[in-house]
Image (cartoon, rainbow, N blue to C red):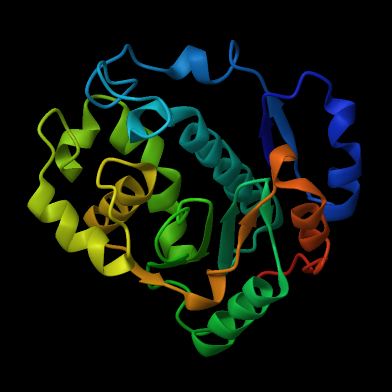
Length: 235
């Protein structure tokens, strides 16, 4: 687990105790993302674009994902064992029963193909908030920050100063993603360039992002399925 934007690490004690991760890393903007971030340009905080909606403003999210997967690789090095699956989940994603069952069904169906680079995520909006990845897809997802946001890498996936709308529509529209310059399409285009097969899992459609304005109902839904998965590499 990796966490950013937390002034008081004690505020995460409850969540950490519930999840019981084998490794946790805290960082702040000054010592973390800001030190690595390139200057503004087409691929990073692109001028004349809206911070809410253009992928280039969401570098911290994907930088953090890369840091988290670095912890996964370090754990593998320490134990000498390799994970078969990985989940990328935003901390405000409510893991409801449908989603948990959907993950279990995919794992059961494709158990022996963990080296084949495949990613499953939610159809349409917020598909970048949760992803189930085979181990073969982890390195590609972890590299999104480096490959897209730095050194004008977004140009290679069709998201530069002049977006390749034809290519992006071909990749993203079948997954229900219409906003071509958002993070959802960026992830899809990046994974496709790295040879990862991307599938939309209907079981993930009821995922909810729990935020203060969502109220008590969404908060209760997030507690509906509290699942602790054992830390065990796939045999």
